[in-house]
Image (cartoon, rainbow, N blue to C red; front, side, top):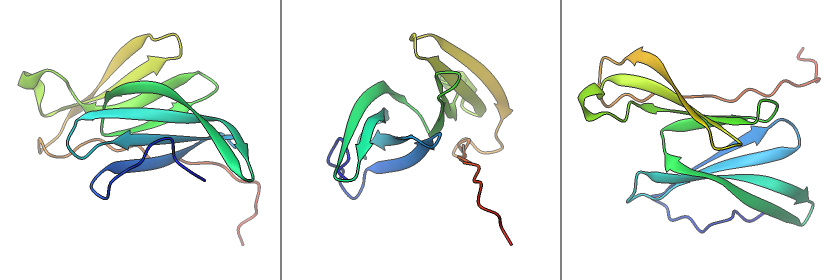
Length: 124
């Protein structure tokens, strides 16, 4: 199914699930720190409808549909705090909160979020 944008090989595209019914995709152009987060509003066998939710800068993210927030992990935006990691919590109402995640040993190491979707399938 098509994405809501046309990426180049150098662009960053990260797909994430939002519960079991929706998908989210993070898109960052290779020449910009700005990124977009798109969330599906409808998925059918032959088509998908996307709705843009957020435009920001970030390293990784996940969306909590129940709490209606996106959590973005990145470096602190203050230049004097380049070793500080932060989580930015953006509400559906546009509210923004910042959580300090502490220092990195290297200013080039960014915090990373990984998605987990529980399954009813039994592992043997």
